[in-house]
Length: 384
Ligand SMILES: *Cc1c(COP(=O)(O)O)cnc(C)c1O
Image 1 (cartoon, rainbow, N blue to C red):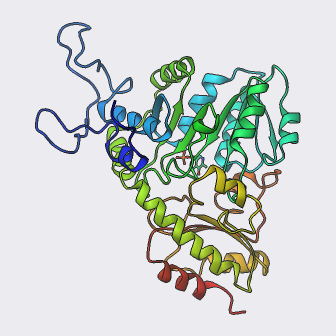
Image 2: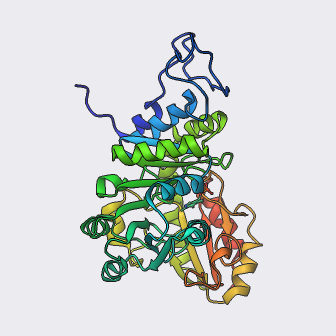
Image 3: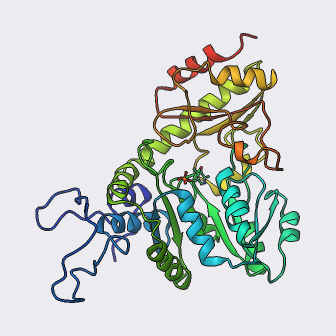
């Protein structure tokens, strides 16, 4: 048997065989809604209608499964569409879910306001407090433990292997949102998780030009349920979007290297600046999750948050003063972005215990020249 290929090779080749009719190195975009049948019900290659299957989407799904070392990959129109489909597959009214108290705001909104209105209950908990997680799980009622690490925006690191053990002892499905790390830096299935969720809008797509989401699942029965819902409800990714995501993934490994090295240099620069109170970056030895991140990740990622000594006024001023770091939601693209969580990404959790302090700023560090990035930050920071 051929030697198992390494991540950087898989990212370029899994599911991407050249086109057999023309030899085109890049598989074409199958921009079609339907497929001609040989005779009634006699399909060519199993394709009937693109909500049920499309070769471009399938090539992305094969690639996603390979990147996470999972059996089944499924691709969706957005990260939240992927999450919603998984929640539908696992929960019924009255069920309970335990999630981190700093999960992505949109995940909390989906669970609390959409699934909550059909009778799903949730408890938010500090995932780094393993005892608190055990206590939050209700026997026979809790069906899912939802983990996000590194978390957003404070980059808290939680122990996937320990949490998976706790979840499995209680018979719950352990889900990890791996968007912030990307599969280049962390593979939750290998640490014991049951399902990996991605917003492929972020690092996987990597160029801020496409929305998408993914689920990677090992269990055949759960994968079958999710595949049925993907077809029956229809939150699928469009062919062009799937193609763009594949295109982005080919450079994921090299992009992540640069995201990590740029972010490390920037975190160290900010940490030494007098106007900055705390820098939240797992690559700093002072970060409480540093040692754990070293074990469970192969790099510390491109996301940094910082708090300002000058409170919300200083934070807001900074966000509007950077030039290379553009003020926008989202993350994981080649270009650097700055975000004010309290009023942007985390506005939906204001007034809840997921609220983000108003002196916090989040940076998505891109892959530009690091000296230019640091010069931009320096010019936007208060002089003393
Ligand atoms: C953006 C994001 C999502 C939601 O994904 P969309 O593609 O925007 O629907 C979920 N989880 C995390 C961690 C995210 O950053």
